[in-house]
Image 1 (cartoon, protein in one colour):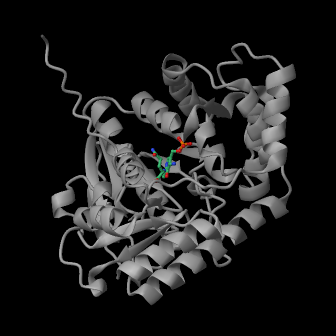
Image 2 (image 1 turned 90 degrees about the vertical axis):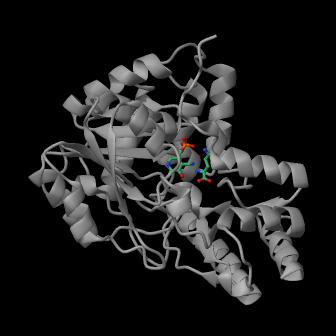
Image 3 (image 1 turned 180 degrees about the vertical axis):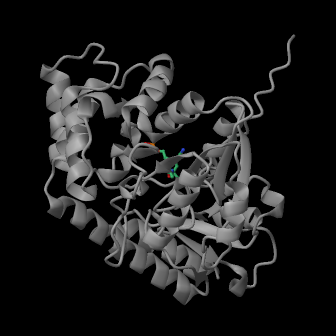
Amino acid sequence: VNSLMSGLGTTVFEVMSGLAREHQSVNLGQGFPDDKGPEEVRVAAADYLMTGHNQYPPMMGIPELRQAVAEHAKRFQGLDIDWQSEVLVTSGATEALGDCLFGLIEPGDEVVLIEPLYDSYLPIVRRAGGIPKLVRLEPPTWRLPREELAAAFSGRTKLILFNTPMNPCSKVFDREELDFIAKLCLKHDAYAVCDEVYEHIIFDDRRHLSIMTLTDMRERTVRIGSAGKSFSLTGWKVGYVTAARELMKVIAKTHQFMTFTTPPNLQWGAATGLRLGDSYFSGLAADMQRKRDHLAHALSDIGFDVLPAHGTYFVTTDFRPLGFNGTDEDFCRHITVEAGVTAVPVSAFYDAPEHAPRHLARFCFCKHDETLNSAIDRLGRHF
Ligand code: PMP
Ligand code: GLN
C-alpha cells in the first residue's frame, strides 16, 4: 500500500470543537456567531432557492454578486473595480486563499507570511511549492517588526500573504504599516494577497483600509472577502476575490478546477447583503464591539490579562496571572474539561507551536449575551 503523507495536520478548530462537543462546554473556540444573520439576506437566498435557477451558475459567480462586490469596494474603499474581469466568487475565503496561492505560487517561490497566522495559510503555501519566510509579531503589542519584514523580502519573493483585521491577535494594520508593506512589494516586484474577511468587524472608530488603495498597489494586490463574516453566516462559505485582470486570470484558472462554482442562491443572498445600507455594517461593528467589551471586562475581572482587540471575533488573553502552570494547549484542554468553556491555544497559529508563545488563549466573543454569560459564570466559578 502506498503511504499517504499529505503533511497536513488536523485543524485546531476541528480539534477544539470536537473536544467542546465531547465535554458539552460553552464553545468560545472556533469563531462562528450564534446569531441567525440578517433576515433580508436569508430570505433572499431562500426565495432564490425556491424560484431561481439552481443549476451551475457562471464560473466567475453570478453577475449580481460580482456587481455587488465591485459596488461595495467603491463604497467602502473608493476602489473602481471592473466586475466582469476583476471579481471572482469562491466557496468561502478558504477556497479563495487556495485559488490565489495555488494559482500564483510556482515551486521555489518565496512567500512572506506574518505569524501568528490563520491556520490554512502555511499548509497551502507549502503544498503549492512555496518557501515560507515567516516574520513574527510579538505580544502584547503585535507591532510590525519593520527590519525583519524588510529582511524577509528578496528577489525571490513572489508575494506576501497577510490578514487585517488579524486573526487570532485582533490587530488592525494602520496606514503606515500598510505603506511599509506596499513599498517592499514595489521594491521587490511582489504581490500582496490580503485576507480582509473581517473588514467590517473593526472597533473604536477605526476604519478598515485595504492595501489595494495605496499608491501603485492597485495592480498587484489580491483582496479576499467573506460573506460568512460580513453577514454572520459562516456556514454559507461564500467568498470573493478582487484582483487586476491579469492576476485574476490565473486565480480563476485554479478556481475552475477546485469548485468551479458556488451555490447560486447563497450568491444571491450575499449580493443582497453587500447592498445593505451603511447602518447595517456600522451596526455589525458596534454589536461586535459591545460583545468584545462584555467578554474582555469579564475575563479581566476573573484575573486574565486581556490583550487589546481592535477587530475580528476574538480576544487573546494571557492566562498566567491565574496561576496556571502549563502550556496554552494544556490550559485550553483544562478549561474545557474542568470549567466547561473552550478556547483556542494561540500557539496553533504558528509554524512551530513548541517555539511559539505558550501563554495565550483566544476566546471568541461573537455570541449571544446568554452564551457569553454562561461562559463567564463557569470560568468565574472555576478560578
Ligand atoms: N481567513 C481568516 C482570517 C479567517 O478567520 C477565516 C475563517 N473563518 C477564513 C479566512 C475563512 O473564511 P470562510 O469561512 O469564508 O472560508
Ligand atoms: N475562522 C474561524 C476561526 O478562526 C474558524 C474557521 C474554521 O473552522 N476553519 O475560529
